[in-house]
Every structure is written in structure tokens, then in C-alpha cells.
Amino acid sequence: MKRPALLYRLSVHMATRAAPLIARFDKKVARGLDGRRGLAARLAAWAAAQRDPSRPLIWMHAPSVGEGLQAKPVLETLRAERPDWQLAFTFFSPSAERLARNLPVDVADYLPVDRPDEVAAALDALQPTALVFSKLDVWPELTLAAARRGVKLGLISATVSSESSRLRWPTRRWAHPAYAALDSIGTISEEDGRRLEQLGARPEAIAVTGDTRYDSVAERAERLDREREPFARLAATSPDTFTIVAGSTWPVDEAVLLPAFADLLVQLPTARLLLAPHEPHPDHLAGIAERVRHLKLPRPVRLSQLEHAKPGPVIVVDRVGILADLYALGDTAFVGGGFHRAGLHSVLEPAVFGVPTTFGPHWRMSRDAALLLEHGGAVALAADGRHPLHSQWLVWHHDPAARRKAGKAAKAMVAEGRGASERTTALVRGLVTTS
Image (cartoon, rainbow, N blue to C red; front, side, top):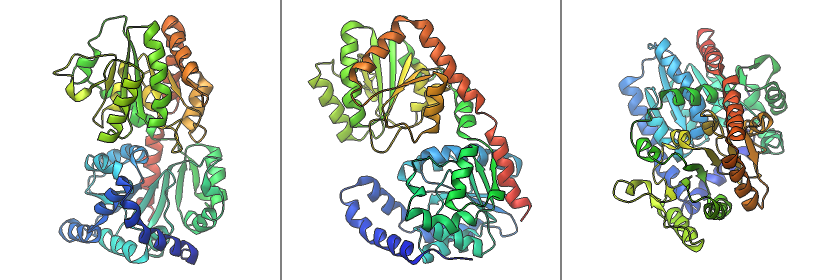
């Protein structure tokens, strides 16, 4: 069994050495470093107290929240069907900490740094029967070390954009042995399967199973209780209120969104903007308030202040974990990230409620966005999107039939994608039952 390339190991070593310096300027990196301190000891302590080697253990890894949501329905089904199996979940990004705490698993923690000693310590503690990655985040050191121990390897909801940097050198060369070692791969589409073959995956390991997020967002939407707070308070508006829910926005998104809303409010005083920034930390919230002041919009009211303050046309959501449900309140939605180098966030969350959506020009890495545009459930904006966005809002306000048609198309797209969780769970289950 091959080992990772020397250049890959050197790159990981250099990145690890540089991380403390980067953490001084990047709070997310700092949180990740803090979260990994004592990781090996925590896993060893859990294993000593609770690991039963006679029971199969599935180790599921997801880099961030989106991939974690793809893993969630599979973990839930496995927990219900096979309560005798043990489940572990790891994540890379600190943003997934909250999600990890609420998954039906026996142990959840950060992914170890992809170096031989850290990987070996995690494998020694967990003793997994199968290691499953969500979407694409296959780590060479961990994957190949697990393969050498006879651990079955899987990849679920796998997708590779045609523009992915993983298809280029040197990443493609480094990852090739790891992808070749995978025993079972469930892809979202046939095109993803062909691109995974370019990365090194064996054709006989690949099957199209779909994207589990479609089931996940649909099931969450079905569970939504519109009578609980803050949804009941936010929904208590006059019938002619036109509500725009803008989610996961970055400052570059808000530079387009807020001026467009200021233009709209002049013509449509009943318009309302529920703005949920991607990272609602104090600096970001202060930046939103300053931009609103500069545009001479009414002072924004934070969600946490609604109980004691009169709501205005701009309500800023200063808590996390509720955005997916807030989209249900919208007449239309704006999904952030499309004006940001990080790329577009989830468009499925508004689509499942039949809410037509707009987003910025950087959407081509998102298969969901492409499908939504193809179905007619969304509109993509150009880089100078202020006036087109304002115009699109007016169209959807003045023509409710057109808005409902777009929303119906969006909801139908999500419905067409359902069923992936069942197929994907069967793939993961097979890794254990055939081992």
C-alpha cells in the first residue's frame, strides 16, 4: 500500500508550523488550533471508557457544516437501524462544532492533523471498521494508514466541480493513491464519477447514489414549527409586507444587497429585509450597521433585541443555527457567497420552501445553483448586481404569479433529488457487512 508523497508530507509539516502565526490574524484558524489541543488524549480516554472492539465502528468525517449535513441523515439511519454499532464523527472546520454536538454519535471531535503520528493515535483509539468521508475531503495520510490496517474506506455524496483545483497538479498527484484506495464511492452524478476517476478512483468502486442534503433539507423543512420563537414574532407582519431573507452573507455580498434594498424601500415601503450574515461576530455586525447608516436606511434591529425594540425594515440575525428555517418566512431569498471568493452557500435551504432565490456571479462551483437556474427557480446576478437585484425584486413583487412559478420550480428540484439517503446508507452499511 502506497504512502503519501514526500512533498505532500513536507507541505503538511510546513502548514502546521505556519498555523500559529496565521492564527494571530485569523480567528477561525485560532479556534481550530485550540480545538485540536489534547485531541489524542480525548480520543484515547473515550476509547478506554467506551470503545468495544467486538462492535463495528464507523468513523464518518466531514470538513464543515455543509458536508456534515450530508452525513447527518446517514448517521441517523444507522443509529436507528444498527444501535449495536458505534459511530464516530470528525470535522475540520470550527464552524461544524455545533452540528457535531447534536449528531447521534458516540464520539465527535476534530480531525487530527494529517501527519503520521496524529493519524496513528486516532486510529489506535477508534479502531474503525470503516472510515467514510463526506463529499470530497479525502486526506492521504489518514486514508492510506487506515487502508494498511484493513479499514474499509468510503466516500459519500461525492462531487467534483469541473473547476476544482483538485483536478490540477500538484493536488491531483498527491491525492491519487488515496482515491484509488477507496472501496466504495457514492457520487451525486455520473459526471462526478468521471471526474473522480481522473483523481484516481477505481471505476468499479463508483456508484451514483445522489446528494443526501436533499433529504436532509426536506426533512428539516417538514419538522419546522412556525409557532415557536423567533419565527412566530417575525411572521407577525401585515399581509402586504414583502420579505427578503438574505442568508450567509459576507461584506462583499452586503455591498450589493443593502444598496439594492435601499433602492427598493423608496418604491416599496412595506419591504422587509431579514439579514443573516455568515459570521455574525461583532466586527461584521458593526460593519452592517455602518453601511446601513451610510445608505440612510432606518437603523437595523438585531434579532436578539426584537423582544424589546420595534422591528424596522432591516432585521439582522445575530445568532446561528436558525437560518435554514428563516427562509420559510421569505417571499424571496438572497443566498450569500456569490460575490465572495469562498463561493456560494446553500441554495437548497430556500428552495425547499418554494422561495425563489438570487445570488452573485460566483456560483459555478455549485451544482445545486446550476440546477436551480436550469429549473427557473433562481436568478444569477452579474458583478454589478445592485440594479438588477432591485429590478428582480420589483418583478417578483408586482407579479406574484411569476414569483410562485419560480418558487414551485425550486421546490420541485429539491423533490426530484430525494432518496439519496437510503441509497447512501446502504453503501455505508455494506462496508461493514462485507468486511
